[in-house]
Image (cartoon, rainbow, N blue to C red; front, side, top):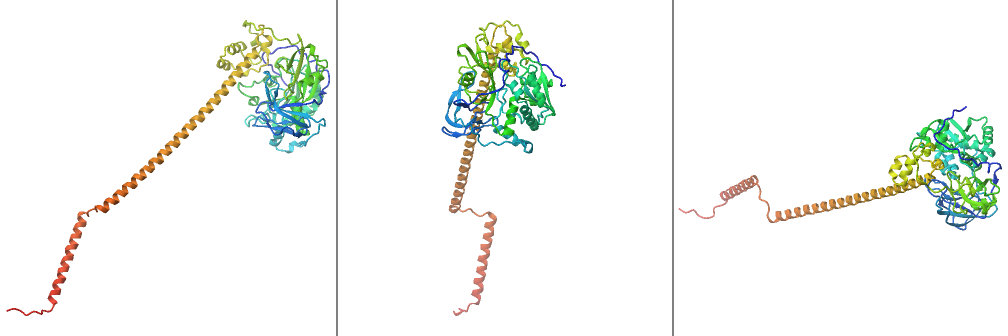
Length: 535
């Protein structure tokens, strides 16, 4: 029996899970069109590789990844590419982004698949590449690419691999029914990840309010080294850092990642996606999504194709328009109100809540903080929410950052307990966004400064080289002119010989004259005397 620890703070909001967890998973069917955003994950958007009018098969790659955090986008069914345009996507701001619109041909014809059932006979790098090519991201959080997460830094050896089945947020039951009905796939997906990471311990953690899922997983994990652990129901026990603390008793360091303490968390839905990619060669083209709330007549969990319009799912679930008050994507704690039901299901869409009036009412107007400290008691990260709120409100972002603002997991526990109805999480998100924007601008400015300084240094170096070459040419020209002048002077005014040379020349000349006279005398003595001698 594994020893469990506790984490600070936490709350117990009404669960409301029985609305959607009493029925088996339904298949959502094929809508008239599928809208596929190019960015459904953390990282760069995928790069389009199809054109309008192209015919594609189910599982074909429509957009390829860019960068180490990129993942591809695949066709959820066979059909024709109708448009590549900007359309509304799931986002709190209601923003638009680039999407591929696919019109199904109703044949649902698979393209070529590449399963890898003998994955243990392949290099681990090849298996990781296979997972990346399948477009798999974390299905329980922000959509972090799974292949990247399964390849931690070399110095971070993973000792404990945790599969997160806590699903602690109210209303959401997608993971619960998945664990009940596909427990064998969950376990086999965990086995694949364990083979990649070689951890000492493998744990599946499930909140104790899911007894059927715990029983199914325990049965599927028999004859394995996998531990199925029931943890106490408390929000946010499903947070990555909180779950690690519950299972291992260790805290992820500030600014660090779980691998820094030898731990890794993956979602149960991610494990199933890994299983289907390796054993069946299927990319991530569908996911389980909870459709719940009192404004639908048949709530439950559906397996919906990625790109399915949310309006289509609500219609299938019997949406009562006249009773609908709020439409929330995600859970009531960390989700957000949808501005339009025409946005598509993406890889991280785990729940859609159609709430009636009074079920999830808008919070009352914000009141002044009374400094009660309830937010600090509820914070699972042991932060000072009140202090962070003041800094965020007064836009003292540097001080907020020094108070570990980025350790906030935005679970909403502080806002939930605040008697003044202060939307604390919204303030923190605003501050984080401003800091990120400032940092991005600063990085851009620093990059521009470095480029400017490099350019200036290059121009100065080139100028110095030009000056050096000019001076060298001038020096060479001066030397040539000097040599030319010297040659001219030598011709016009030859240099006198030095004294020794002059004396030598004079001696030689004197000797030559003496020799000449001697020869002349000798010649005169031997010559005949033709004239008579006078007496």
